[in-house]
Amino acid sequence: MPGTTTTKGSTVTEEDHRPPAAAVFDAIGTAYETAFAGSEAHRASLEWLLGRLAPGSRVLDVGSGTGRPTAQTLAGAGHDVLGVDVSPVMADLAARQVPGAAFRCADIRTLPLADGSFDAVCVYFSLLQMARPEQSALVGRLARAVRPGGYLVLATVPLDVEDVEAVFMGQPVRVTSFGAEEFAALAGRAGLTVLRQDRAVFTPAHPEAVPEPHLFLHCRRDGDPAG
Image (cartoon, rainbow, N blue to C red; front, top):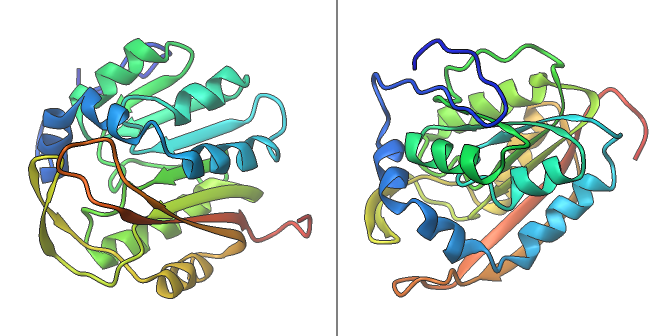
């Protein structure tokens, strides 16, 4: 219910003024997890992050989907995970599938985030239905939500496109993204140091899928000289 405090295994739903992405991912549901479960690059990114987190770190998973693999992997390693997703279907699935993490159904663009309140933030492919100014503003807010010296992992489809009509897993969507160099520059403007970039081409396990370029930026919030 709106305004309810989030606890592990439960969700909070904000029904008013839902963005289009909510309806898209409500419709896709568990099919998303199935389609992307084979991404070795995503799992390698999580391993990179796990290798840098202190025990019991506080991690925000933006666009947490069904909770797998990101929240499940992090919570399974003993971290304190909050997943946020705009889709109530996804948030409910995640709460049931990953009871060791907490999930909230909310629009991350308007969700209050205290500065320095997380040790790490993950953003795996959850920016693509936002306008470019929204993406830039959100990455800046998320960077501030990470403590100095903490980590932020950003993943996107690195294409120079803006408000393009597309079909994603049978659902009509409008997609906006940045090319790889501009996406890395966006991270830099947010006060992040890009420690590592990984690129992959991945074909989701879905009848309508085509190969997709994927870019993973592994970043540290400036303020700590450690590498």
